[in-house]
Length: 432
Image (cartoon, rainbow, N blue to C red):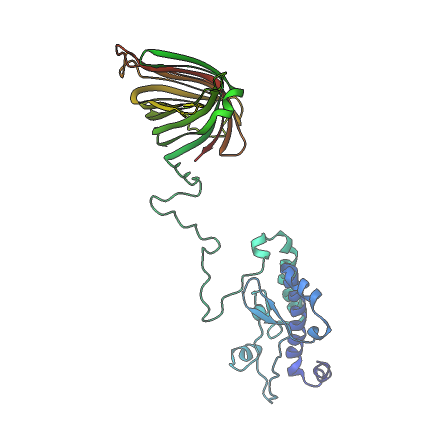
């Protein structure tokens, strides 16, 4: 450029080119400042580059023309010297003449610089548009100041998903919209429970009649426990929707052996007595209220009436032996057994009320027999207690229970028995 300036006085025909070059460089610097003002990424890139990077040519993204511009000032070819003078208009029309426009310098507003204008007029025009845009930069909307998105390279696949500004895809016909919550899964219609329990009668009163002879007994819990030979009990239920089945099974057997000898030691008597009682209930049920569970909100309730059949299996076995202690060694043995298995119609109901999320009160009552199997045929249960959840599906129950059973065949020489028990029942109930 200094050489061009030195040659300027000697070669008058090159003065417009030199002025044009100077103005183009000045316009380029001003527009570069405007681009950096409009695109903050240019300043951030400059802050991150090192000394070695500053020597490399860089490109500035043009926010209006959307193409990179060289950071080096344009190289302007000098016209060849000619003896003939050409007018500025002819030089502009000539294909090879260096016609300069600022449209390629970054802001998209081209002005003829220097070729047909005096230097004093070309300088204000070249500064007017860049300075005006630089001052208007803070007032432009954010979308105008933001840098354009990088164009995809040739051959690269188009980005998947909706583009910016494109409307969202409409939901499929019949499908859930964005505002609709997904439908909650329907609960399993099947449910069930299983309870393992033990009945501890505080007092048991019974009487046994065999061919007109009756024996009455009263046994307390402390005397009964050593006599227990076998006990098993449990109840369970399964339902589909509100209909279901329930079963309550219990079996108990007690026994003892007694031996005595006469005062003179002549005879010794031995007796073995065992008694068993099995009660087996099977019924259809229907539930009102909430489904049975270990945990529920306070006030939740359920009432479940049921109807079915009860099987009663009672037996009494006596084995007596008398043996003489004299020289003859006399011995006599007698065995007796009384057993009865019969069915009774059964009606009952059970109810539950939650007092707190884990504490519930429950009750149960039923009656069976109604005198259909003999002159006297009746059985019943009454139970009232509390249950506490020790897990999300496990309950610990304690209740007071009364059990009564009476039977008589009604024959001329009658046989039958009665059994009444009341005491504490402990149970562990699982819900499925």
